[in-house]
Image (cartoon, rainbow, N blue to C red; front, side, top):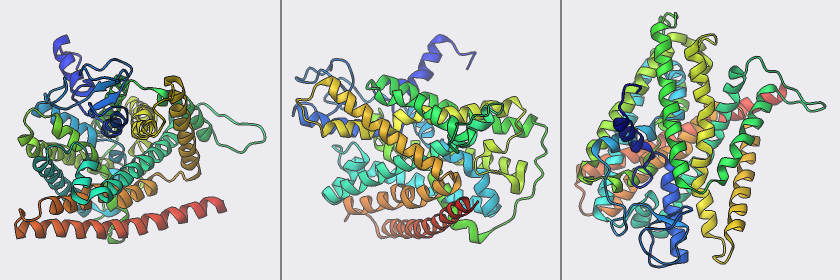
Length: 476
């Protein structure tokens, strides 16, 4: 990156931070949807604006705090190239899930890599059929729109519910990860409070969350785009440092990996599924493309890249640390090495960059429900206050249930499988009924059945493990 010219550097930055047409976070998707609803409340002339503190360029009335997003009727055009779209989709997919892939492979056995790859192939296919649904009805712009097109209001409510559940559980998982990694970053700091039994890790986590709370009051989406770029950069740093440790860290990657531990497959299936969670933002990537007919190629390319990265990371971590590998690979890396320190800082900074992004859908939907006569300052006060309260509740839950692998597995099984596997197939079969051949219909039904099975067994397994861990924690 250091060798890039200023012009090329701007191009790379624009891939992530161009607020007019690039999407690098599921929160941008949620913000756009919620703000479109907000626009409907204030005017019937513009339904494609996102709240931002600047004048709207589309020339519509009563939108002094709205800026257009992505619609052919406004000033923003489809301008995302194939390369940009692949970068956005890969950046969307690589995230918290990568931390647990070595742990999942070690516990499931090396044969479980076929489950990881299989889920990647299936998710690439369901991304493809999301594009097909958007082809049929160009007015659909979001995941919720597809749900509404398929099953009406019930479909929209179901899609929205699962999206918000995924965001909520993701925030809890990010906070648990923050709590686990902070003590290693500040390993020489020991903090206590008089008359209150809290650990140093818990106090550091409280401080970090308090530092992040002001970001929830942000209303300028250009700032959110910047944070999104930071989150992607942190994810890539984590992957790079693990590979560096394997190559130059002085640790022999000679640990044996069991072939298959069938009884652990239900739990790790949720971890693998969460790693591919990103479908809620794919409609935005599709609508931003210059040539949407290449969306399938974008999906195949992106999922191929991500699956290869996950597979390499899973085998590298499992071979390096074997049975002692932690549910977060950063916690297993040698603490004295500079690569480990970089990985730990990246892991700690990632949640801080994510809080504002993930909260955006809740925040803008909240403003949609406020009276239009309410002043700007009071709106911001309510928005920021509710966000702060929610983040504090998430903090309390994360500190109370500090079991990263089980919370992540539960999220993957209970929520991500539905969003990534079951719902796209159900929406596609409903929207394209009469146009789908019997073999394709059979494939979609098989994916739905497979998704329901791993969702049920994974949810049961991860829930049991989570409850047992909580009970053990209380007894000690």
